Image (cartoon, rainbow, N blue to C red; front, side):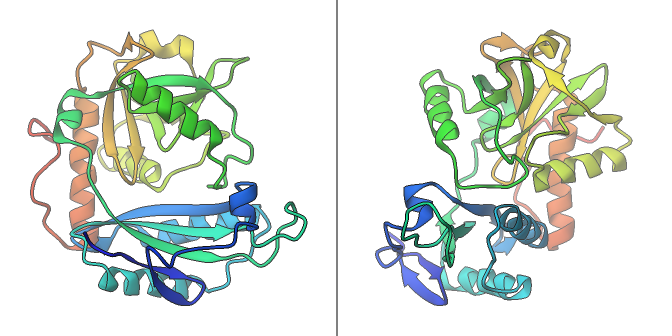
Length: 294
């Protein structure tokens, strides 16, 4: 078993040494922010975008990151050299700090963790995945906060039903916002649709929108509701750890013909090409053997 090395407030520590005080607000209140990205052939993908979002999240919660953006990127680079996992998941965390009254933020702790990254199975890309819905409207959705109570419970429920994700739905309006750890896209009449408001706008989400422009795929950032599901020919999730992952059912309601759609295939292939282009690497294979740009 590989003993990972992580950054904690200016020190490099092992898994066993990676500890913070119980009185930290991240522990007693779930207060803090984080961001997550992965590597391809040990190169971090879209590091700048994730660092920018990390700082934006901290600012929204009134927290100050104790290092500059360049220093944080250097920490990530150093951590990649200290850890020997074939591919790595990188989690940047800023806690609320140790609080005397257990409610007021103080000097935060900066943590950068490195884990072994395991990709979703090729079968999930080839056959698509199931998702469920859960009633929830996030507070300060633009900040990637540590408060994941609803997400943890929803993920547990999803796994129990054979699904891999849960979509947040406004219980009053049935508006769909995003998933617990992903953004959601749909296809209607050949147009790609994704929610725009009251969501955390993922870096993968933005890459997919840029790819739609490049591929001349019409798209719209607009509200999505549960009643719209029967009109969708495709749906898919986007996230750093999922890329473009097709969805074939929501709460057992089949999307389209229940098969992976051509637009999802096309965007997944284009996304992989974008990784190769930006990181100057060659990936071993496409996720979906049937994927093409034709």
